[in-house]
Image 1 (cartoon, rainbow, N blue to C red):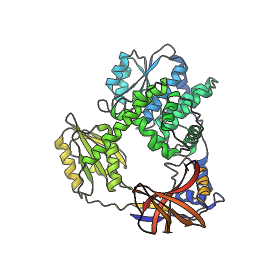
Image 2: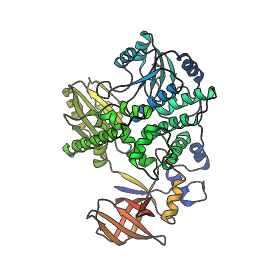
Image 3: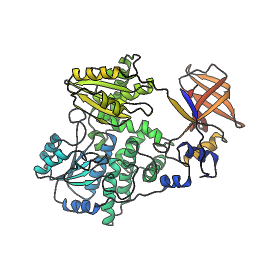
Length: 520
């Protein structure tokens, strides 16, 4: 692994070296750059939102069915729209397709199910923008359809219905909002137009949109930043309005949390039922406060278990690209397994399984390698489907023969990737001061990355814990700072390493420590 001590120069945005260096690390070099990501543009409205308002007013005596996706963004978007419609006393229900049998987005089976629920109206959330044929089918059955989505728009193939999508009808330049935020904007616009001000309702909707913003890896600046920052603040104050979410967070027992911690503690819980069971379990928690938190935790534990079992089955070779086939793998965890193996091997990874003769797969890339282009160039003449972007995608083949052609094509590619880790050399004051300054830039995430720091030197007061972890101290800028390394025993007295500064309560004492990430 190559180390890049990144300290590019830029304008003195803050009168503080650490804060300036963090911004420069993220290629935010001028005050103008910073203002572009720091300004808050929400609340805002979509062009034509008055049409949505008029539609909602006309639904007072109609049955509305929400059709959402099964991931965290879709679950939160579905919950937002149901809570909003219920508040207006509109008869409503929802449908979320099954990952294995329905796949992503609206389809004719889900539309038929909506008809059985006596639907007059379908509102899609987090899907539908690429479903022209399906929307036409729904309209042919006499249904009114509104598509709310945030995915890229094909202007030549739009559904023939009312559409709200930030890529299509937003006045503002937008770096990216998720499907749940899209739903939130519409709900806010309606309530604002009616002079309805209900703090409890809006906080519930904000909370769900914030979860989805983290889960869908949206850039954490501008309105996204404000939304997530306020959400995290209320988690830490134990001031959550959505009853079901509050139950989930109480069981997690988070303290002094941040967006990064939520992404690997809260988000997997919300995603797990949609991977292994029914996403409706989480929607019911959010809209009804159902006491099914324990079930969600159990499903997530099962997800962890079968993921580990799948990874343990994998036998890797020295190929440039990992192509793995596991006959009986639950396809809900294909992407998780691919991501784990990619992280482990630093190679692009494809993981496939057999679903009633259809070979389904998921892929993850490394660095800036374009896995979408690789897939496009390697497909056999016939295949079922594929789609995604340069870092991640899904694909499927009609049969094992098509898959084998694809695997053979990939085996001919010679690709090597040497990972580079960008670091900031630690040259600041105490860990306490560093931690407190970093929190002023929260939330960190896509668009504003929290950097890891680099140090090297002699260590002292080294202690091995439980025969697998190591604590030690090191003199840093005249401060005697503490560090911890998990799952590694340090034998040397001189080390080079990367770390993050965190705060924790240990034996009723508040401590600031360096949590070691990598030893070089």
